[in-house]
Amino acid sequence: KMLRWTGVVLVSLALTACMMPQPTSAVRNQAAEPLVCEGEQQCAVYWQRAYDWMVLNTVWKVEDVTDNTMRTVMPMDGSDERGFEVRRVPAGEGREELVLRTHCDGYAWVCNTSDTAAIASLKQYVRAVD
Image (cartoon, rainbow, N blue to C red; front, side, top):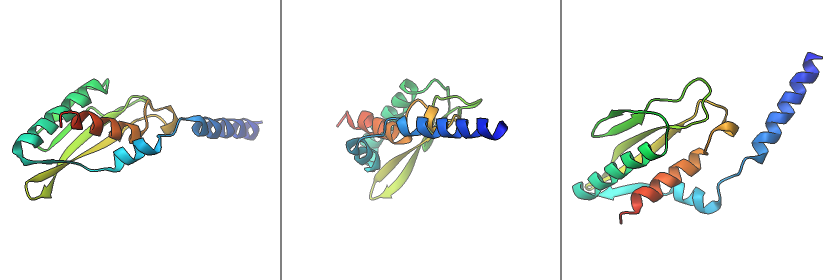
């Protein structure tokens, strides 16, 4: 009886994962394109925009902000809400790349957004000032 129940649960989980909306090719392309700023002024604006996006897109407190890293409290207890970390990475010749990492404590199919969609959203928001 236990094996039967386990099989039903596994099949249900697999079907649920398949039903999750997948990011479109446009969203995947936007997420894959590096988010690079050039010069002190543009990089400061991008960094502020990334912070603003983070505050608007998570329920978690932004707990750590430095000149090179900002992060939220990381999700816990199976939460479906994503936490974020954005890093500034030198890209040479006065340029920097902003890199977003996301974390959800729940299973991938119950998280409120996909990693790809979150990354594309950040990049779109930050670039809106250009």
